[in-house]
Length: 205
Length: 205
Image (cartoon, rainbow over all chains, first blue to last red; front, side, top):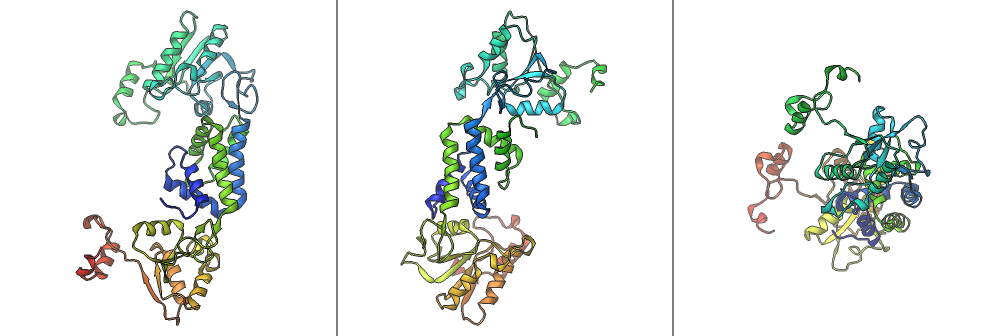
């Protein structure tokens, strides 16, 4: 791609560094901004720099927060003895949306992935183990995605908790509510049969 | 979507103002920036603000440029009597890539669209007509997309040039080189038969 303007080329290049944004999409986005009032670009630039400069992570759960201890961790109504281990803030938002969980979270910030050079020390695992050793946690719920990396991370944490007498569980895998069996993948369907639950339990929610 | 941080919410909101970027994608992009070194965000923000503040449009063709008269318009080898009318810089880049056009461009900045409230006065049409009236143009090539808006814009300009004795043409519509006839749409195939060209001409390129 040859540009008639260095300024334009530079803006497109920086925009195309974002994941999933190719050169063409970047050009489309930048040309859109050019057509909009100057304030829109200024606001976008400021919001991004502001976020990066002032962002805080909750001391307790490591979720993104504007204060030292996030709203969830500082809520006295929540059960701090039950901790749900998730990858990032999107998972927290998804689980919060269900309204079914009253415990706290622990945000790892990723998954162990030797392929991408992410080890336990790059995540907040040690802080989780510390909390566990202080006897604050009764139950730990693993809610990482069920990939090789997710399973590895779960197992690593599980091993670290050995002998602490903490109950561990993982979220149920199964057929989504409303889905047709014939379109489900075999692994999920197989697990949902092996891990079947008493019928009465299914009437609760 | 409920956010645990106003800073994050704000950044996601501004990002989601870009075309084709929904809230979820915006969140993904912003979280990606959070994981990258601070410099990347700073560079992106600076490039966008810089572009918006310092961008120039060529006085002659209205294309985006870093200087008063763009490289194409100031190139003495190009034939200034042939002008290709396009919508925006992307079309200029696409035609330049072919290496088949040695004239100049005129960038309209959009198409006439009553539905979106874009009239002739919002585009650079008057400047084009001025150039034509000064007798600088022998041939005008319309290269707008063949939509209702494109056709309207072409026709509006065509009418404005009435009596100036300027030759007008539009780029050929037809089956793309390498395409199978059976997959072509009827309108395109129909036009390509009506506007068939002497066989010898097809041997040139």
